[in-house]
Image (cartoon, rainbow, N blue to C red):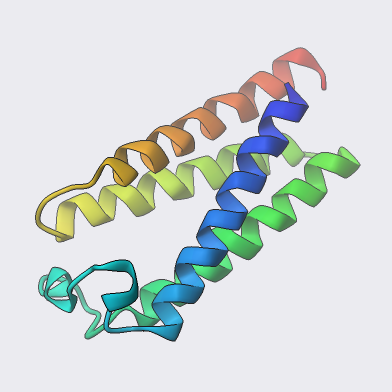
Length: 127
């Protein structure tokens, strides 16, 4: 189960670093084919700050969680669940503030829910 958690966390890290970097580098959203008008009901004028959040929290944060899982650090399962919960909240806020939806939100919302549950399963399995 730890291998599955690591694979999911590394997937999240790589995709969040890529997406976050693209949003910071092209805050107008054109590179990812996302119009700035999507952010009309949010506090953001462009995609720069969402890109930073994505890159730092989910990109670099996932790398930190992966390191804790690899080291079997005390309480690492809580970090896995916390990362999953943060991802579910991130997607939930997107769905609440941004009109429309994408299959990517379903994918990453599901990933967040899966990480949340797997963190608790790690405790029960004693891994």
